[in-house]
Image 1 (cartoon, rainbow, N blue to C red):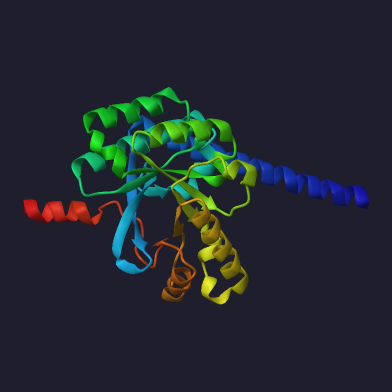
Image 2 (cartoon, helix red, strand yellow):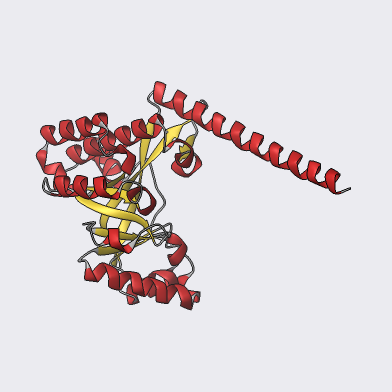
Length: 275
């Protein structure tokens, strides 16, 4: 009887592994086709000042790919599958290229772009950056590069040097998803991030979660000690926004202030002027 139960469990496990492998293969194939046909774009989400929530501090440019039907696929649906592959590096290059082009076209824009620490030392990525800065050196001071806490801890020594080199050229760095559990404090002291983006799991519903209020308050204190601005992610209600403001979080991001859009306000304004 026990053997039969084990066989059933093994069969279920194998079926699950097969389903996951098939899903990942489908995702890789979708991303490959999108890259072949250059069906990649950025969606833009506002990051607002917590004390003046109608004022946008900057926008985050989020990578999107289109499937064979033209449907826009958000990064959450594919990024974890491809981030450790060559496709992940190519997506980082394309996101940077599109972000730099947008900054060059719109001089009032300040924009953050995501990258993996695995793109540090990737020559195509650096060539893309150097080409963009050569075309317009002023974009450096309006560019923010976001590296997740998890990614930064993969190769912390290389990330530290990489950041120092690019900060000397005027570029700002943000640690994304802070609090998700990967940072060793001994490495944190060596990093020189300018912004700390607090993981949305601590911010969503914080108005009714005293434990997360204490944790976010502690993160704010850490950021203040290291002269970093803070951003609260996944802010979805006015009550959460107010609590985060009271806790000293500098900026807020989430659906309460605006969803990511592929036609941002500055492009709509340009179209109106041309009409």
